Image 1 (cartoon, rainbow over the protein chains, first blue to last red):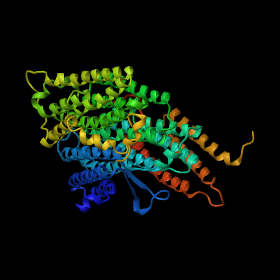
Image 2 (image 1 turned 90 degrees about the vertical axis):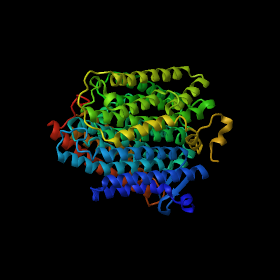
Image 3 (image 1 turned 30 degrees about the vertical axis):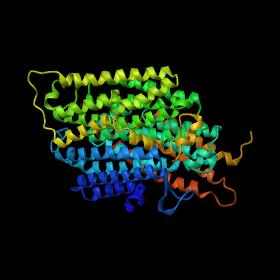
Image 4 (image 1 turned 60 degrees about the vertical axis):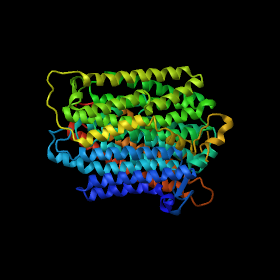
Length: 508
Length: 106
């Protein structure tokens, strides 16, 4: 047990996928096995780290023994551990799915020639492993420059994965995604540089102490936030997301929607609640909240109108991301800040599980039917009961019906809004739930329609059906197993419910 | 207005960033867009070099230099990826610019 308690799990969550990424380039035949093994190892390391943080509070780890100011330090608190654990679980599920998906001879597009399929198989695993390494590095970063580097690593693998099918639509979408992503990170980098110019450090803890309201700090905050809004696909900068996510292979869409976009939001949380907590103002927070509100409404309306299932799910991501931005105005109210904070983090967890399950289920449906036109999916329930069931359970969590994880998250956000007398935000969230119900039911309505003679369908491998079901069940179970994650997100939380109780939010 | 030489570099850096941003939005040719991003990046790097000079004493601050080196590596990777993708876009659409139609087919 000694090793379990003292091992530097933090560094393993980065090294394992990074090493596996290189190995999957060298040993292509064993790539699926290596990938699943690395995802499993990363999950074990994340569990070890979570146990350490639960026991001893926030941790810092100087890489190679070089700490601040010369070296790079990794940092794990409740927020980063939670995000790390989430990406480990989702990553494991998607890896198992992908191992089957990319080895299937008649994958989604049976018409593709053998060579194209070989290519996809050869490139998916290294790119996904590098993506996981970048993601874990991002969650553990303790300084803003390291955040920039990991953000770029993440962006490069995400763009390459989005282009994986090599088709016209996917290539165009990936190119647009790359341009937006590069512009976003350059803005972020300029913000980092301004911060260094003003305070001569990039360490987040030191910056949080030093940062005070001044034109240069505001410019840095505006540049970094603007860059992240672009990368995080917030309305009206979401235009690149639906085509990029919808034209990727199913496991890639799931990863991009559940993990990559959330990484930008994670950095925004760090900036707004730690680094610049003394600098941000209520009007600025309200502005972000309004962008979120517009995203909820616009994304949902677009989802209602889509003719393709994967585009519907992608627009649903735009809408659900809007919910996260409601935290910025809500957390400005002292009495309910921590409730809103917990609700928001729980929303990330619930959305990640549900959206992964939904994209995997949509991938199964598209695989079976050979297309994903919603109007022609009548009666698919009879041939694919498991996948439709997964889609339904994921939908329940997205809508926020009890006892799902989405319910708990929305409940806490609503609680914060109502206790803080923020009726506008409360009504908005309820309206968003109704719209979500609308587009989920639209798909289910077609799926459950009885048809006289079913059309012949491709066979869907069992592993692919069951991983979708497993993740959707997890999304629902998150509502019942809320106590552990809640305990974790309390550790090192930057906000507390009442001004007098700030010390209870700190380390235990 | 008396402009100190020390202010010249940061101002030039902001100017480069703005020119790059304008070009990125104004031009549709993909190569121009990629070049525009590189000009923006150069603006940021120039700013970093300008800060390094600010340190007291004859020796400049090494941290911004390290950041510029890292930044250049990242920027070269990004440019490489962008060029490769642009190449593929041209091969499939026969144009070096992004089409206006969205979302593709099933």
